[in-house]
Image (cartoon, rainbow, N blue to C red; front, side):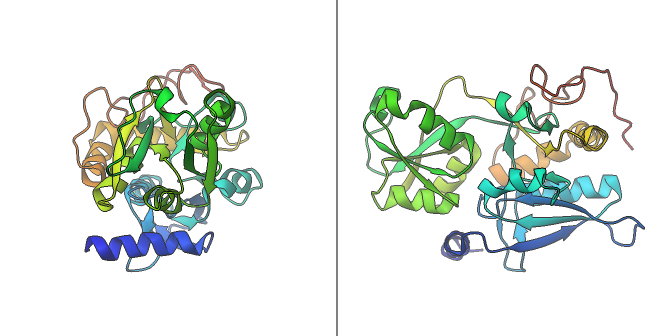
Length: 288
């Protein structure tokens, strides 16, 4: 796929806002109803429009592998990220396929699997802009973000201290375009997305990562779904052990994960250790 065509697909999705797209993965005719999950279909390279319809990306490949292990179909809906957690809590989804940062606040209200990737907060800037070296370089600036994310929360929490102006969008491509067009000084998002956007958009550069912001990217469930959370986490651990998640990471992010990256590390118990919802019960995934 050419870069210009990929950019058109992604930006078109951004203009479409919350237009629904649906992708089904996993084996058919299992005798069980499909599971349902939601993600942001404009968050390349995790999920973005496919020429064949629906969405493609790291998340789609990951949950296709999870569906095979569970012997269940998974129907993946594409929607604005800001509406995904409310839709999960309302019972529309069984879980979210979106890469969801596990913050203490979210962990207090949802159940998460252990992380399958690390995320950290990183800024993207327009090419030719002076590099960001510290928070002081952000003072008085406008920062673009995707709505309903930890990136929006960081800007809000630091707006008064650094005199920041928040510019929030329904999609990440729109937040990137705000930087390219000069409406925002920088875009704040996850490291994988910032770096991927920079490889696809010549006028956009991956810049400074906020120190101390490395967190789990995990799969959220409702608090009444502990058994389902544990079942999916066991599958994730098996996919770490056999190298599947590391292989998908290299495919979509362009680098082989290191031994201490979350793609390879099997964490004890269920959920991200040290956060609300963590179950320290010892477990060893039975992998086939």
